[in-house]
Image 1 (cartoon, rainbow, N blue to C red):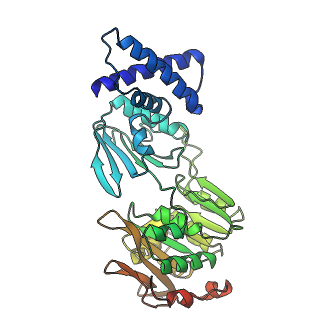
Image 2: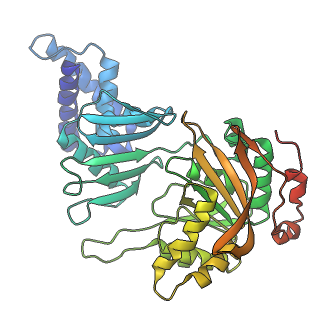
Image 3: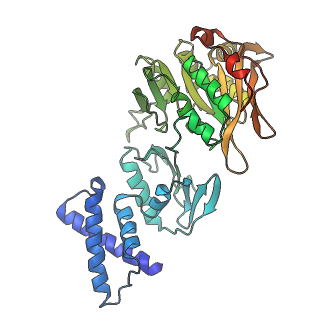
Length: 413
């Protein structure tokens, strides 16, 4: 294996020399990259027969590794290409992990420190973002939509740390979530009704619980004629709507200027004639701008980290207080109660399966400093079950011509 790596490294360097001589861009022409690599593999193999160079026992594999190093993301590219792998992270050059079905495993991949830095630089090229001593953290989207997060020393102890979160492009609808076993047909039909009725939906869950996938599937149920505007820290949502505008935040320049925050994007989104506003995730004071947007009558959806649906409501009532001293709970609590209609809580079970854990309907009332909500769906003995509760706020359903009782009164699938 060491010989193979040395051979691939030598082949790659020879191709890079040719690229510099001929001034071509292999990243933009995969066919040309493969042609250059195969030419060099053949030359290398011929030289190895009459020298001390290590022989190549699998020329096809060597060519794939060289192409990945030149146009992809080197030793990590096979993991990014594997549809079974959900996440890749590097703790150090010798500690490269992947996750399959929610289960982490240590790989046999070993990188050099220089390789890790080169990979990060290549990954950030298309994003326009940077990572350096003045900005030791970075979030960015890769060309395939995966999310990259990098932290460098001296924030980390010694090595660069990077994490790549891949997103399933196979699941774009509630029907596909039903087929995957994440929820039952009854819950899917109710959530579809909520989207069509313009309900404001809060998707909650822990890290890796499937919030983004659920948000994608929910918005996928919207009517085709709707104009959807999405705002995110980095692009993660993958909507296939006919009329959609996607926006992401921007880091400040080296001079400290030009930053575009999530708060600014939410405000700008309201000027873009949205029929529906989607916020990828609220973490801080932008939650206040979200509530103001929802209070203006624009249907919306967003995600939030929380341990349960009720915890999500508590958190959404707390985060706006970060916006300033003039914001207090006397404004936030009733605003959350009136604006948020449905909470969809996702979870990952101990086997790594992502599933819908509960659906809450906000009643619109505040009691004892808490926003009231009732469970429309919940897990009992591992199965999703509807206790027969009807939403307290029915105005939007009725305006759209829907009756939730038609779905919630049915026998669970």
